[in-house]
Image (cartoon, rainbow, N blue to C red):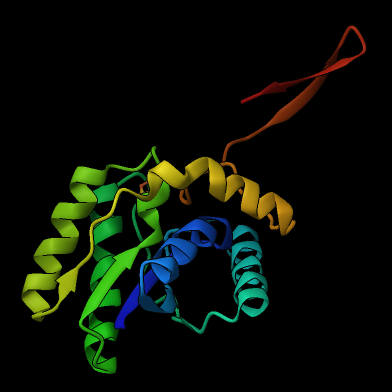
Length: 175
Ligand code: SF4
């Protein structure tokens, strides 16, 4: 069974990816490192949700300290920083393969993640697993709903302001 370090961005995105990896014969260890999440209250909500999910399914997760401040909307650097730290940790732990739950999102730039992940892997002498997990995106939504996991409505750096107005007795969302 190949050991794999899974960079996890949040509990809901981990549901399907962890399931897929386990079903495909991987021995999964999680690694939570997301200095991109703002504001702090949102970071804490996602962290707690991750801990809740991991405890429920028995996934071992290492939680990394946030040691950098990332510039919002600089996705390339955001991928680079998070995946490089994951590769460093994998190397320290003697794990030769890593991947990320970011690949479940159809809204992320898969070509860029693959490119960044593979270059980092080469630098560290390990391998990056690219898999298009976005085919399981709706399943991950169902799985998180079934587990009552908190599910955010933005990637990490730019919270949406959502104001509710009452029009004709109905609530309307304004972003
Ligand atoms: S949109 Fe997401 S991936 Fe891009 S910089 Fe913000 S948090 Fe990082």
